[in-house]
Image (cartoon, rainbow, N blue to C red; front, side, top):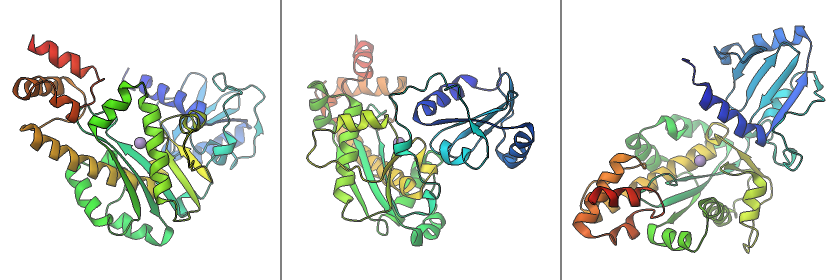
Length: 324
Ligand code: MN
């Protein structure tokens, strides 16, 4: 199949749990909706479907039955644009335990003064985890767009470094770097990466919090309930007007800026580690990384991984196997 339904489908499912809204509308409304979402329509429509559209903030799927499903960060807001009746059948993966309304994102969030937070490095074997909280208010938005601030996943590292250098002076932010040695120590004590991330986000938000925003938007890596469970023993818990969204870089420039600054900090630290290692390290966690780690062990001894890599990744074993 040409269309990568597998990835898409799992993406939906994740959003599903976050926020799903199903309404029932008449044929006429479905026609109007299709027209309204014309530029966002997907080629592939699921079985029984009339159309599927992918908006920056949610997925819309209309079915011949008249049901229209909205899935994603702004499902509530998007569905409320249409006068349908709420569906009586609950979507199957929505569980009563999952609270969605509490964290649902304001419709006009993109125009609000927001602190956004994002992290980098959690999937990279070499290098630290960096987390940034950044504050962006409406008056800055045009400038930031002009400077090239957008979803960092669409940007290459050299571009990110350039944009970061431009915005770092004008965007108030807090930056946390969790270096490898400390990461390995707390990971070995049994802390999950999810909890590590939650603690770092909360800390970064706490550090920047003297700036009073209209809201806080976290690029979502866990269900809100799980996130708050991770940080429940912290002295200070940032939770007032906190919203969560996956792909939040596309929801507010503050998250896009946070993501760029976090990536910049990661790249800088990464380059320092390469220097220390005496070889050009590689990002990610693929087979190339195993080969470099093996070479590194050979040249400097296994101990160097403790201060340059995330030891619990499978890459550690794989690289040692390469040396046998
Ligand atoms: Mn993220």
